Length: 315
Length: 315
Image (cartoon, rainbow over all chains, first blue to last red; front, side):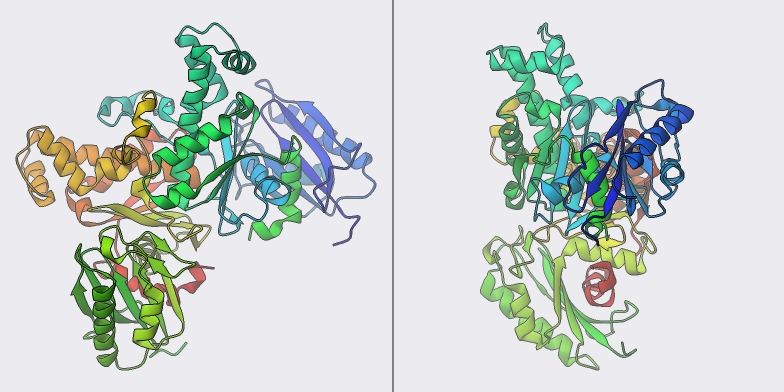
């Protein structure tokens, strides 16, 4: 490794894509960051064009050519195929993201992972999970996604979708078999369906609260509004159950929480930990510490670059 | 590896311990198997004596000295400490199992893992998970325990307790914060607390069924008793939710089901798969196939020996 070597980092999300050059210490090189909006109207052609444009600008503004490229993306992904089908970009399903980045950059050493996995890498490399070997890293925001480190390695799963914490069913109606046949397969019973930012806002409104956004909810909860506060506690309780499940299933001892909605209350992380410990049925599950994320807003890009710089965590 | 090389396999459970010699093909050597009962009265001294006695008999009946020893045990375990605290052997907590087996056998190459992890190794080596790289293997019996293969490796977790499927909270009462403070931390909401053999029998009795055992339940369900059948379906539904959670969290595509209660009905495995697919909120979670275990009754010993013979799955 040369100290001047740089990696092309690519992050494709549901509302924007970003590209930048990242050095061997996890630093985003000033002036190399470029972004473009994405959304429900984004299709394969427009995503291809936006990616090529952002990559071209990043490469043009970089002091050196990249030695490799790391790609994080909203999923589900299909790692063997090198494609992704972001839920929030329904018109860009099965997008050949690896092929596109390769063609746009000329780089042949490319690694793709789910965005949650990249955030987990960033926290492990430069954030709150430094030195951890068994940890869960996740964000609470529009969705609840993340990545898992087990035995010092980032888990991928068969197609690359490991780590999506929000899809855990935590509150099934066990004695209601009919519920199984409803459309959506019970998303309302998942951690995301019960505890994400938008679902928590919706729950509060159903209880009579009149705000509109997570920011409103944060302000009202801080000001002492009882419903807003209960909504915050309910989200943390649900998320804590999901954390417990990972702690019990995978014997992890650290959970790192990021994402906008995790800042809804100063004690949100503490509430999540309290719920996690209360729901753990064995002592080893109560070892888990829940701490705030520390890699910062650049975590998706830093984590994408970590696919090269911290390849030791992928082996 | 010499074709005649043999491994000392040790399995310590809540009702018995077993020792035997196992060859490089996963065969238990005839005449080398020895066992002793265990139970609530078992303390450290009696467990130590029983283990030493069984190991001495196995070694005395073996054609050759062992090249290594593999130990599977009921947990929770503490791999770094080399100890185990089996829930069903409360008087033998923090039992120094590695040191005991080393002293009794004279073997210096010893590996310890949770019993569920050993069963997962056995199924991967000679059973229904052969060739799998991302799989869950578990038993439904008094408890619901297991092991997980991710990326071709057996997960251990920080202290060795990864894989305990039954401890997943799947049916929390999210809107009942008070429930968190009850003793036991919500074991009634876990897959094991809702779906194990004894809990399923207890549930059926609360509905008015008058049998006593899992065998009674199996016979009555087969004979058309409506409550017995509903109890079987309820267990499979709960277990299926836990399978879905692993499938979604870890992106596995295979779940192997063993244990006595999994034979409560001819279609139990199918019912589990149906529930797993119904509860999956994403297509990749519906890839999971649920199949019966195939490594047989010797799986715990075969899996313990696999800790040496299939050490490639531990790296």
